[in-house]
Length: 93
Image 1 (cartoon, rainbow, N blue to C red):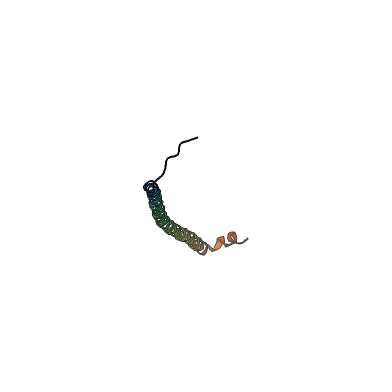
Image 2: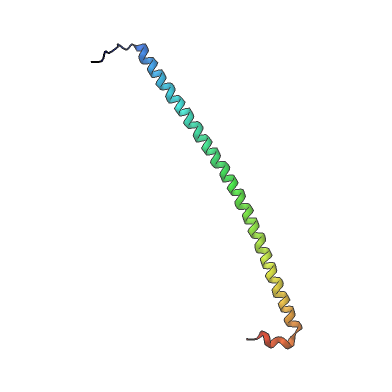
C-alpha cells in the first residue's frame, strides 16, 4: 500500500493556482494563434482581390484588342470588296 501524505489547504491552493495559470497560458496562446490566423486570412483575401482585379483588367484589354483586330479585318475586307466589283461573284456562295 502506498503511503498517503496529508494535503494541506496551501497545497491545494498551490495546485489550483498552477492549473489556473496553465489554463490562462493556454487560452492566451490560443487567442494569439486565432488572431494570427485571422490576420493572415485577411491579407490573403486582399491579395487575391488585387490579383483578380489585375486579371480582369488584362482580360478586358485583350478582349478590346481582339475586337479591334476583328473590326479592322472586316473593314479591310469590305473595302477590298467595294474596290473590286468584278470579284463580287467570288464573294457569293
